[in-house]
Length: 108
Image (cartoon, rainbow, N blue to C red; front, side, top):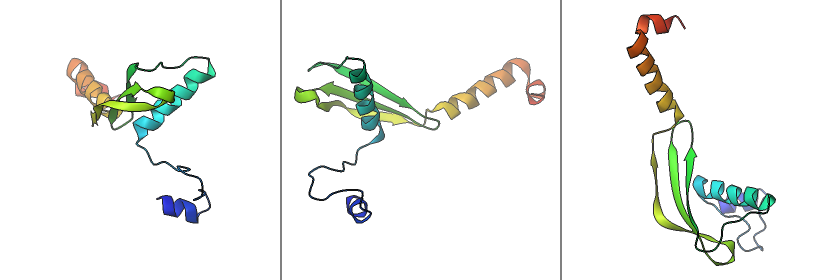
């Protein structure tokens, strides 16, 4: 990917770590840190937090700890699975069908 980004002129190969390829929960964590910094807040060294990235199809869970120089590290292996909102929606419809009957619910 990095080579393709360099070929496309998106990345300068002379700048170390100009392009980092990271997982989605890490990106979300960095976004949270930037949002906090915008209002004068930040995580302190040694603080731990759990980040839930809940999407339509999946939920990703990241476990991070702040280290020196505002860097983060994993303190537990990431977890997650197919528990996203579309599955919650499906189960809610099943509950409504059970409570009110599928025939009535199909009218809506």
